[in-house]
Length: 238
Image 1 (cartoon, helix red, strand yellow):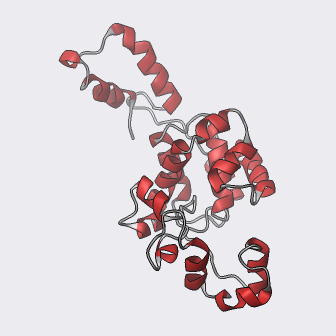
Image 2 (cartoon, rainbow, N blue to C red):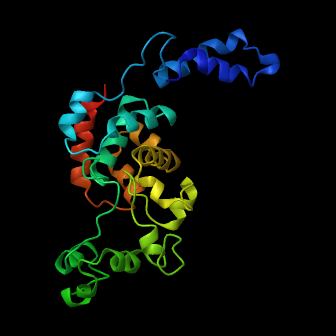
Image 3 (cartoon, one colour):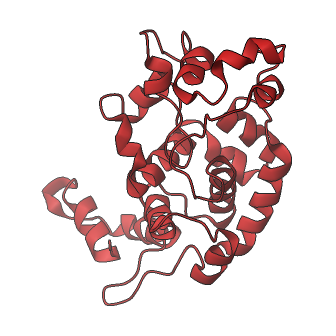
């Protein structure tokens, strides 16, 4: 666990002569407070209440809470409101942190509901019913940077955020190792990086869940559940 002393040492390594200026100390301490860093010999304050998280996400994959908390610290998502929005969005995307891979096993009827413009009739959806690979290549192929045959399936949703599309995998550093997002720590880290890169922090600080959902999802699919999970997350953050 990073401490204030470790943070100071890191900053000092970039300072002229390896020395911090007295005027910089208040800002450094404020940063350490915002990150929830402990004094040497102390334990960092928890960001996510363990008992409340377990009740909120009983089917979460092993190590989810710890990975999420570590990623939140690493990417500066330690403000309670920002953290709650990030957790609420991820809870929705990953079915309560229980999935690290997108479920593309749809019935033909369900496909007409999710992608009505692509599958206007049950008959048009039938060839892709209960065929995740074929469906991914159909709905994701030729967009989001997916240019090669099979890219839709290769770059299907993974991680807590369900990172999708070659462009997003490339931007987050997972283009050459997409299955790394099936690791709980990578899943949390990529989600946090995406959230920050997409401008999620400002929207979260403004408590703008509609605007944030557009950034995260590209639309407002599941908005009611996103609102409900974010409200719960506000009670889960410590």
